[in-house]
Length: 163
Image (cartoon, rainbow, N blue to C red):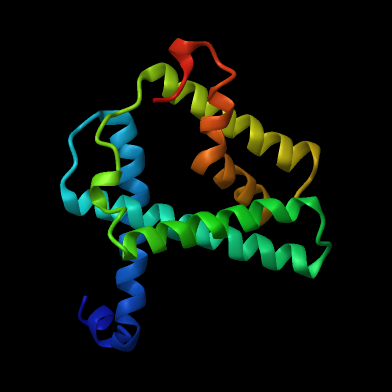
């Protein structure tokens, strides 16, 4: 442990803190979906940060991959991710969105199952049928999870729709 502390690059502390916040938001998202336990405001903030950073990361990396190869219709997905991240950041900055925007309601088992299946099918089709780059696949899955799922839910029977 002493070697770990002495070799630790303290100049990168802010980056390490952001990575820790991002990972905690990811873990809390999965934990909350499966457990239904009430969240603290700090946990909600961590999940909100995760949503913003995941959208931003997927948009920027997929956009860079598309710029390096071809820039076609698939560019809609990275642009959508970046727009989501920028809008969330803007709304957070002006005080419209805060940790209270993160729902404390756990999804029902059927909602969780339908959402998971939709993301798995989307991932499988992108990866194995269309043979897309991993970043573009991630961007498409993020686009679905961060907004398109609500649109797709309108075509489901009432009891299967997301809240």
